[in-house]
Amino acid sequence: MPFDHELIAAAWQNDVPEAARLIAAGADVNALDDTVQSAFLIAASEGYADLLDLTLAHGANIRSLDSYHGTALIRAAERGHATVVGTLIRAGVAVDHVNNLGWTALHEAVLLGKGTPPYVDTVRLLIAAGADRDKPAERDGTTPLQAATSDVLAVLGTARPEYPTTALLQAATTGDANLAAAALAAGAALESRDGNRRTALLLASLNDNVDVARLLVGLGADPNAQDDRLDSAWLATGVTGSVAMLETLLPAGPDLNLRNRFGGISIIPASERGHVDYVRRVIGTGINVDHVNNLGWTALLEAVILGHGTTRWQQIVQLLLDAGATPDLADADGVTPLQHARDRGYTAIAALLSQM
Image (tube, rainbow, N blue to C red; front, top):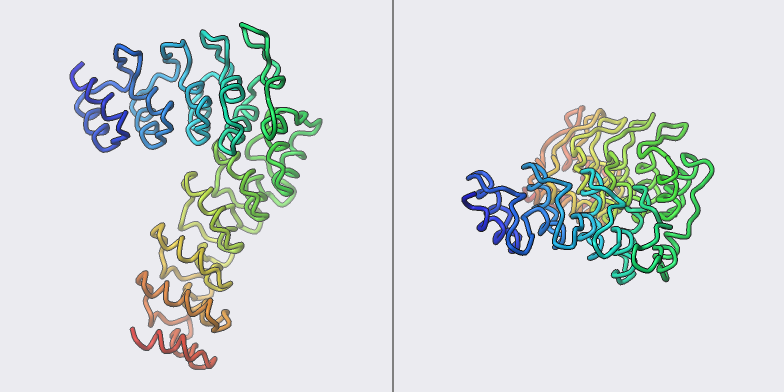
């Protein structure tokens, strides 16, 4: 096919726009070169997440095999590309496929991995997806559990719980990512909820348990699922102010316009509570800085009305103004942020608002 060779070259360079252009022109994401490489397999082995998404969206064959008779999942697991591993698991790549070396993806993550955090995440994902930790390698009979050391051994050595759903929710609350993986492997539903309809991902977010959240997001957990108080994993980040959790949830595609029980979006409680770093980062997502909640307040109004007027809230007001927040957007009673600042004696904030 025309353009197939060019697509493979673009894949090695992780040139996603060029790859998209070539695919639109007729290039095949499954076309193999003489080394049994395709754009799809390259994306997996090199950890190119956006390129992988592109190939999957254009018919990537998840059963395609490389020169070692290995799947894309095996290639990604060997290199500890946890984000790609999660994508491939969600796409349906066989978890326990054996290559011509006699190894599964779990074998390769353990035997060839470095035991670093990305490999630990990779092993957790594979275990949660049902990978067999006791499967012997075809050549020497070594199982992943026998070969594991250090932190990876802790993942593989965690027993599957008798009550998977309870264990998953407990693990999300306490931050035990190994138990969370074991609970999922034992049959807990990814979107399990507690008595208040809080999902495991929401519980992880509320308690800032990033390791658990990374596992759940990798498997496709919904960041927008709301509980009986209309909280969601994403909305919780605005309350906690956790930038690490924000970054963990962004790849899951959270709805930036999702409203809490007060009709607000995440930037509003963050501004109220003085979470400077969070406000700075969430502004970069393109979130609506002029969103008005049910009280008639914007993030700017909440920073003034419910803040303390000190350095943190001064920084937030400046960040919001720099991001294009409307300085004279009044509340439901027609009172502007400037008037509120003056009424409270917040001279520094009033000076910022007066300059606009």
